[in-house]
Amino acid sequence: MSNAKRPDGRSYDELRPIKAELGIAKNADGSCYLEWGKNIVVATVNGPRPVLPKHLADPSKAIINYKYRMATFSVSERKSPVPGKRDKEISLVSGHALEAAVMVEQFPNTMIDVNVLILSADAGTRVAALTAASLAAADAGLAMRGLISAVAAGRANKQIVLDLNKEDEDTEDAVDMACAFLMPQKELALLQMDGFADKKECSKILETALKGAEKVYEIQKKALVSKYPVEGGIQ
Ligand code: ADP
Image (cartoon, rainbow, N blue to C red):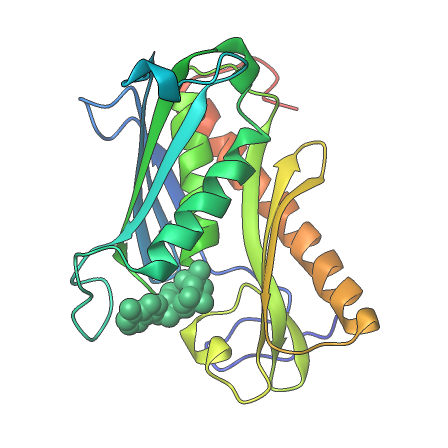
């Protein structure tokens, strides 16, 4: 990919700066604070706990109760505190994506509560939320197959780009593909797309997203190791 710059100075395949810190909420079993460009996210994980009422429990696995919410002050116009269709849809698909990483089958008849609050939004919040939630799950000590490393890629100003910010997303020909990968296995756990692209472009965008997810995974591992030092690092 060329080194030409985007309006915010990034090259087309460059992520926004990402900073993650674990264990920031002392009353949660696991937590993560994440800054991703101008996005600010807090994720907490509690559980597993028994499901009430009991008949809602799944005897084969834990239920992941994922709640994605935007703070009223996270966007320029006040966001209603009442969860809308978008919040509910993002919560549902993100919970399913996180199930690819958490060994839910080890916790039958339980519920794992995952709460993600967006404090500041500048596009890509669902992928930032999943990236933080997966770190919070690891911080909670849940048995995991790997981490969910999520990132969006797409098209802005006729260029295939990684990690669209709001300005990129608001361009006329924008395509926004939110992707979440189980890492290090590189398995796709979530894919959502806005905009129109042909098959060839779609595969280029997906390839760009995977390269981005590999970088996100490296950042996640560093955040984990800085709280839980592991000799030789994490694979
Ligand atoms: P994502 O944040 O995952 O990219 P969307 O594509 O739905 O999700 O939203 C893109 C961006 O649009 C958000 O990150 C946020 O900056 C803005 N946005 C989303 N919902 C609202 C809202 N209700 N009011 C104002 N801005 C919003």
